[in-house]
Structure formats: structure tokens, C-alpha cells
Length: 102
Length: 102
Image (cartoon, rainbow over all chains, first blue to last red):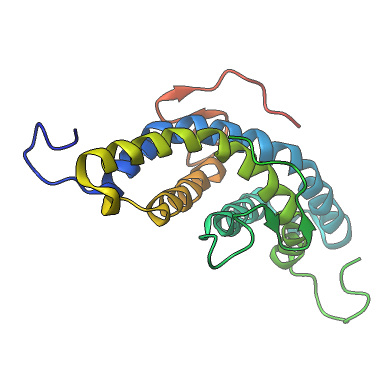
């Protein structure tokens, strides 16, 4: 029951967003672990750029910005089944053979 | 060497974004696994809303939209150390005790 206290109608999007906000910290923790595994690729690329173009050519904020872009692109995972093959277990350029963990 | 072929100057952001695009499929696969673990919370909430407000009150697209919002909020992980405590291992409302996986 979502409208007992304030007497208002339920807003499904708001109810789901409340749940999301409660879980966001835990989700962030796990997403960070995933992204930390990829961090060394970006560090190596950044070092290569620095070696060739100088220390100032690439900064930590370039890498952080790239990781934020990765989160933006990860939204593609959650496009609806009707409009995308990604949500059903495939990503661009790579077949995913694992079963979804539920 | 990033400018051998086209003779242009290196753009660090573009070089890092190229690497990101190469790795995005693999990252998406792992992020999807993380989010699939949380899916049942949202299914349960959606069922509760449906039980109380009817079958049409909440849809799969509401849940997908919420997951996209979760990706948006996950960008907070990658705000620079200077401006946020999250990148250094803490998330709002939760202390992270695990060491970063590198």
C-alpha cells in the first residue's frame, strides 16, 4: 500500500525510483567493482598518451569522464526488448552466452 | 602512437573514448549481471503495485526506465576525488569496506 499515509494516488515511477534510491548505494558498490577491473586498460592507454604527448596531455578527469560515458552507454542494456536486442542478452559486437542471473 | 596514420594531433578524450567503445560490450555484460541481481526487488515492487492498483498500473518500461536512472546515478561513482568521496570508496549512506579490485 503506497497511499496510506499521504492519501495520494500511487505513482509507479516514483515508487520504483524510491526503491532504486534505496538500492543505489549497493548497486554503485558492485558497479564500481566491475569498472575497477577495466581501469588498468585506461591507465595503460593514458600512460601511452603521456609518454608520447607529455604529462599534461591526459588527466584523471579524462578517465573519470570516460567512465561516466560508459555508464551513459550502459543505459542501452535497459532499452525495452521490443526495440533492442541488448536487453535480451546481446550487446553490440559481442554475443553474450551466459544466462541472465536472476 | 595515435597520430601516425591521419597526421592529426592526439585527442586524449577521443583516444580514451575509442578504448571505451571497444570495451563497452564486455562492461555492459558485467553490469547487466549486477543489475539482474537487483531485478527481483523491482519485480516484487511492481507486483505489489499491480496487486493494489491494477495490471496496467506499472509496466516493464517503468522498470527499464528505473534501471536507466540507476546508470545515470552510477555516474556519481566517477566524480573526481577532489569533489566527491564516492570515487574514493564511499557511497551515500553506505561505507564500502572492500578494497578496490584492480
